[in-house]
Image (cartoon, rainbow, N blue to C red; front, side, top):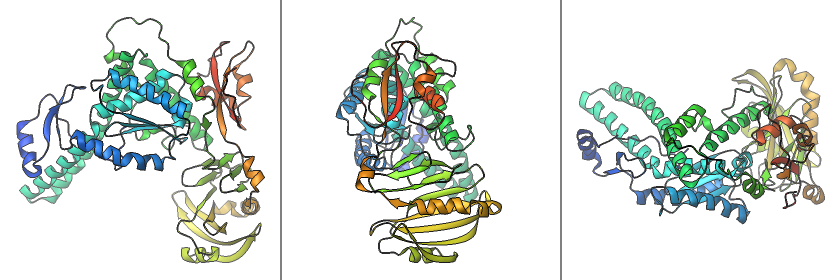
Length: 505
């Protein structure tokens, strides 16, 4: 998916030739732009954004995006490796002298995106899910396809031109409704082009994979792993397995397995291919020791416990709740409809816990309390949600001069009384960690192990540092189907807590 940080919206693509009448109509009010032929797609297109402008936008937005996604990973060897794979693909493209910048983001979300001007980003979460160099190359090639095809320039151009056309129709006919109708129709048109851009990026990515000597099927294999991972993440979050939008980059990246396979088939030249080295062993050795899941800067959600080694605090949730550490909050859900949310109150320096509750208003029974020597306050209310009426309990905790934290407890009214004791225990479990306790908290990491004779999926998955669904997690992480077994000598990923030896045994 090409995702300029300012989100350049939809484009107009004129296939085969630039339509003279449309070009004349649109160049009158705008006065800029040119009709060019893209060297990668062979298509003529009218663009209002020059390559120099794309480079400028990418250069400005790249550092903002890196900061928003947790910064770059600190492993220079892994960064060089990813860049080397990317540069190999660049050399096979129609623009081999174009400067590309490949960045690995310190974020556990499985995602990849490009900025105009050649800035390609992937997350460490994506690298943990990929199983070989060919899959990594497939992701990089797809994002390169967006850049080479100049999809950002097209999306910007079409958004401008559709707006001009809609305004022109309204002026010419005196009908605002007609102009609005055109914009409504354009929304469908723009959405279809978004899918077309994804398919075109897949086609170009397949082309570059073939030229670089990789098997293009790796692109489809990674997509299968992504779909399996999204279903598992939804299940772990207490949602139905088919509720994957929150965890699936395909929700904003409209690619499907059948379209990827179609791109692979259409890019084939009919020449039989011999065995292809997918670079599995070298790739897995490169990601050995990679942080998996939460980083120390984000805090760790483990079982019923959330602990933050940098800010030095922890709390526990009641049995039956599943913790999920999200970028903006820690969320715990119970299948009975109850929910716990924990986050930091923004712009709360100097504000007392009771003062914060007063700022909310409409809370009953507010009172000051003390939680493990920390000043706090609590209040309650009955609120309406998209799930129906809920009882809300708010807890505000002054943790330091800089940090005011809050719990939000939402319970279905018939269950509030029975859940009160458990939620109260969560409130009073919040405490400060000592320096030694904080130092003892270690992130989860990918460890690469070699399958020995007698090793099985159950025996290796038992070593995974998770409380449940160990075998399912192991299979998804290694791209193994429910019936697939292991072969002695092959390398596989497990997830362990703490430091990992650099050597793969």
